[in-house]
Amino acid sequence: MSRRTPAPELEADRGILSAFDRRRGGVRIGMTAVHVVLAVGLVVAGLGPILWLAKAAVTPTQDTIQQPLALFPNGIDWANLSQAWIDVQIDQYFLNTIVIAVGSWFMTLLVATTGGYTLSVLKPRYWKVLNGAVLATLFIPSVVLLVPLYLTVVRPVTGGSLLNNYFAVWLPAAANAFTILLVKRFFDSLPREVFEAARTDGAGPFRLFWSIVLPMSRPILGVVSVFAIIAALKDYLWPSLVLPDPRVQPLSVRLPAIQSQVELDVFLAALAISTIIPIVLFLVFQRVFLRSAGLGGAVKG
Image (cartoon, rainbow, N blue to C red; front, top):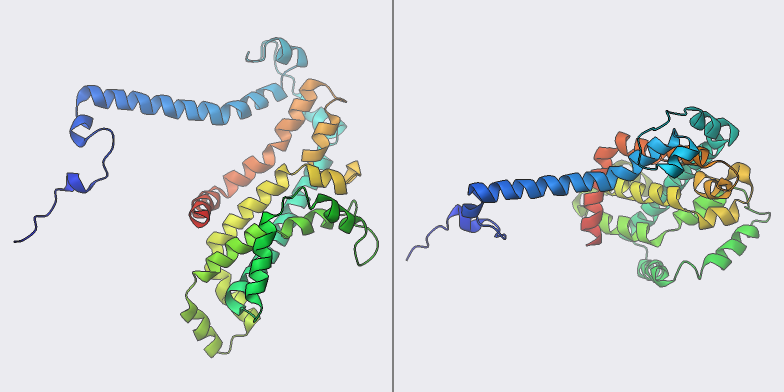
């Protein structure tokens, strides 16, 4: 007996409502209303705090305290932005934040790609031991490593001290076992036939890494870039320990320190300026970020 081809409706994933119910007028209107309410709620929850901060940045202190949700009851005070930028020296901390984020991003990519390439493609005889050692570091709480890492930065084996040096932030950020294993897992999925063909054509390890592996790894590089930049922008504890000099501190460290020294409206203006970095990064690289977020969830799953 020949099998009957199932109807297209039966092949679709089943949900709470069937296709017949969705075609009914009342159900369709109700579902549309629910979708609109959810969409508006998500927009308010996501953009609401950012829009309120932008409004409070140019609002006098008394208006923000007495009528926090009012829309400029006594006008706009643009001087808050200039005072936060010049008098509080937010421009210097803003530049420090960019330097730390770019340096952490570069060092993280350098260590993650070379480490993943060594464990996945080169595979020396002791690669399993290295892989197990890197994996074991994921089970050590970061708080436990805080004191030994700080002592290493204060008295490195090369002599001197790395305090108030950006390498004290860049190097620990790069030594991230999660990103190394993430890149290694992606490299494991690359076709080995391409590597063998490149080796047959005379490509060495460096040429194979630079000309073959990296161009095929743009998605995972985007994932690691997102993780590295976000971690560098929101980190507070470690930069506050190794960068005690206010002249080299990022916004994440300096803003809490100046909170009690400036007016509320100026402080909110400084907070609004600090949000420019992640917003601009997302707008410029939103396509890469969205693709990387999807790939990151798939890789971790």
